[in-house]
Length: 397
Image (tube, rainbow, N blue to C red; front, side, top):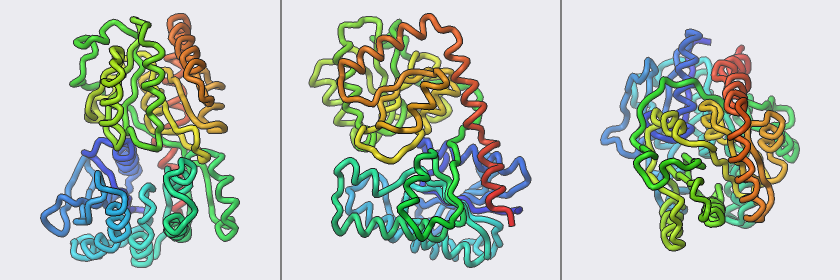
């Protein structure tokens, strides 16, 4: 295997966790002498295609409809047509004649099948689906859609991408159970592909907690997307329950559909222990975490599918213990409790969550080994090298 295509809707210099992970992945592929071609849609291009060389990796950006920060109906239509637009632009590029030895694609989005199918057929190669988001199931769990026409449409799209994948890498063992309801896919190779994150060189951070009213406090930090899937309102409830603890503060950094609402609600509640900042470059994240005490992992409790968020990896890599408010049965509950890298809560009581949060603050003051356990877990379980070797094995002829 000498040349692979990696298809994603987000790549460096975008600031999403997916963009950071895939950047690490393709750089690691280069170490094994494998040439990676990252293919990514770009609605801002004023031309059909653009080829860049970033960190020694070829990145082909293809003109496509806008799918980010638009209303849901427009986004759905844009994502549906996106792979067809991208295929037309790809054929215009000088790389369309290049033979590939494998195709990897990252989901979300679930709409990649038409583009991947054509790439596979053109090069007669294998494919690997990195499945990080089981949609539309999570949207059904959260009550965002019902079992109507929209749900059936998304299930059809979902099935089409599973159908063309030779191997599907899910991020939690309990996700494999989900595929038992897909009899026609039982013969496929479905495996756990852990999330990954390479170690980064320390950088400066544009956010200085010491220059804010949170200076000197034990900081609970959340850095990442703030959308409906996260159920972020619980962070405001927790902050409000701890408003009289002058030694505890909350720092929220990121973007997303709920970011503005959360910021306004914190102001309406007159919370003097929480600060919001817009998203920062991923290179600044380690320096941000060095100013904090505990990382927050928040997932809406109505989720029935399972995942290990990328931010959990970045917390571990920085030696930052976690407070995880997540859905029952999530693999992350067992992982955190067994490795003693933080505390978890799957209930609905703000009072109980507050007690767990206060106990964790006390624990990090006395448990000198907790930070080291976090770093060791990141090295042992969430290695980019391990992920690359696993994908290479699956794509081998």
